[in-house]
Length: 230
Image 1 (cartoon, one colour):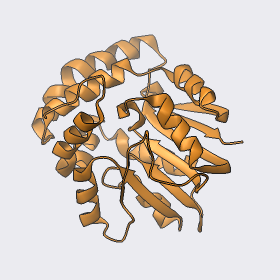
Image 2 (cartoon, one colour; image 1 turned 30 degrees about the horizontal axis):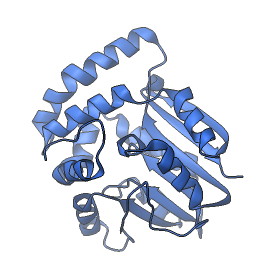
Image 3 (cartoon, rainbow, N blue to C red; image 1 turned 30 degrees about the vertical axis):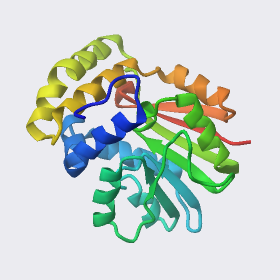
């Protein structure tokens, strides 16, 4: 399997990410033109991890996104359904409790985590509403969700340029640095098909989350959504 289709069959998506695990973090830095590091910093600030907190980092991949939470003293569980990603992550961070899990059927009890977060992974789960309800289920009352995901640029001329970059420049760039360039064609298509900022906010509210808010990063290329479990 070289790429997944937009119906996002879990085995296809997992297999695709298995194939890009080795160079995934490097490729993301290149194709995001260095913005990925800034986005991770924004997520870390929004999560605001504290000692003794329990944090679920869903779609954590190799756990690059999990490191700021661990460094802040929180107990963080990196969870992903790509075994290839987990294997690479475990070699890099052998002390972390990597957990294999499907975002639509999380392997955790109810009301376990103080904060749940997912960066650039919600888009790849087959049923977004089910995933948001699962994140709600495993979050303690008063706990929070932080979602970092590609979105829609707010300035129309830039939105046009960005769309052209996704479909024309991203695939050849990925071919130069990625272990499985075809996977990035899927990623570009999935970004184009994803809801805009108000659309994702509405899905969060439908799943039961309250105090839903978002802020745009890089002109809306990425949006950081936050919400609270009542």
